[in-house]
Length: 627
Image (tube, rainbow, N blue to C red; front, side, top):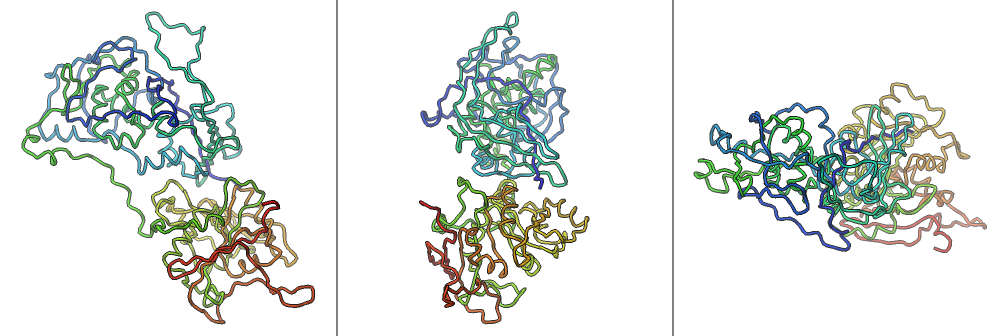
């Protein structure tokens, strides 16, 4: 089965190194944070030690450009889309000087001045800081939509260097490989590329390669439902040898630098852009700009300034240049008549509201579950399988066939969603789907669609439907959940004889799901569980949580399947449902003499009270030899 993935390309602009690359790995040295000025006082526009400019000002020439408000569309100049963060300082064609006559800047009114001076240059997407950290660590495979990838990748592309020779394309899938930037050495001298006449050599910091062996692959699938999967490669380290701050100090990301470039092409002074950046330190740090300098902004604007030498660079409205001080904010009449708290209204991006059905992440301890959950560092042929269901004291899961029965209390419900977040897939029978119309997703806060990135923590629904009874309909909860970005579309396991209408197949594929045909049967002419699990493993599923229904659970509790089942987690409710209920129980077992015997004895049992329920945890598959 094809999966939806996306391609990513490294910024086409030339890497430019800054003297910020002087820090050591965070394990050896704490990073010194710069002091941020909030724009209410002067910010000296002087060159940092080690830069080539000898003046403290940028040159201005030509006519004053038209000013644009935040949100106005600005036509991009050709060749500017590739500007990115700096890794080395651009060697200027000549040392540039900022000189601005205050009389050249006219401010129409105090109200207009306040409006123009308060607009935000930094338009971060939601939850940027947290998502940058998740994409940096890449602890588990990350599946996101193509739109989300194009939104967030520019803010983390400073971490990675594309390995172009390893790119591959197969069908609708394109795979690109990236390595951590610190794996590549810098400052390779070239005798065949002498410096142009009049150009001075720059001081460069030499970086040895191999400092970090973290590698990822980015797989894009383009189709009716396009997604991107980001995952560590098999030979990669499990963690970086450094933190995200260290990389942000080495190189700026292209998302942050694009904010600066958009202002630069409007004709604003680099020092004015930098001043505006510093007025929003929280947003700047969230975007990876903790170590951003005025030189970074100057480097981003250099190409446009060379192409447009006749344009006079000016500060933003509400700001002025003062010799010896740099860019300062002017004080309007409205400033003097209003209290300080009313004058400055920071423009923060309001967090996206969470869906009303969001569940709070459990605040009670769940460590007792750890030894029964999948271990992603474990190499195995078949997925880890966990049986998990809620049962009454007489081992019933519902009052009647097809009747939804609530047995879990609030705490056990949160635990169930936590268990879903820890598995790659949820498997149920078609009878449960037809009876309950479940969503089969994780609704915990932080999961994809509930404040998280992409489909993070969202398991893949898997439906066992040998004859193809499930009607693929847009109003089905699983499909609605997928459309709303709150979960994944289901995979439906069918037999070779199942008649699937082409329109039904195309509809499910359009939502990101698919049909999987299994051709192996057991002696009872049922689909073989080993074949089902192997098919899921071939699609990248490493763990499966089986939630029902009664027929599926009872069959898997039989002795012939114990080698496939790793754990069992049962939520026991303090109630009896009676003889008419749907029960879960393996077939009876007798010993060699024909005497009744226990059908199944889980090992390493734990009983843990949780709210009104009691949780029973146990292991079923025999422990590995020597373990």
